[in-house]
Image (cartoon, rainbow, N blue to C red; front, side, top):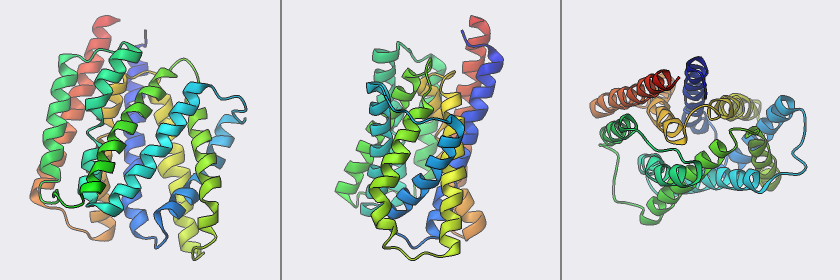
Length: 282
């Protein structure tokens, strides 16, 4: 059984991953490239980070690793596409319905049963997200909303698949996904305008926002149940507009501020409850 110190470190790793993921909104806004080109360019740099980190290529990937990589790619693709077809608020809010699907998947395949604290934290977080996006949610973009819901499903599959590799090396799934995305999307990069600013942004996104973030994530997910990891990840949609507000000048409403605090409270409740359970179990 994981020790309390390992769990605390894992929670910190997952929170750091969410914080790094959240910077994408700011830097993507600063680029005029197409989403698939940004995705491919980011994956190119992330591949280098993971090759240095792993020091090997996954030449004989398992079926589980391929499933995880596929779910990872689908989640990114569906989210970016849904963002183009519906409001950004709808896209990220509907993607973060993932915990609803994580619960049955984690129970069936991982035998991880949520505690009462997990359920309480989940409902608090959903309430906070509803407040957070209250002034931006709409019924526009039906097909975009549908794709965003599907991205929530694939995100749940991804989370459970990563967690299923807790005794292996889930980082290899990331490398497979990054290499595939970079290769598939490279022709689109060639059609874009190359500037020092654009490549500097891509380098940050690949090295830190997705590369280092997923190293933290794959370290944390080995010690934290899938549902809790997903709930900690909800820090991403809260922090994302904060960076945009601070460095891009896009305003936040009062509901967003209150909602963000509620989400933070829910994540804290889940983390504290989990730590307490681990202490009692240890």
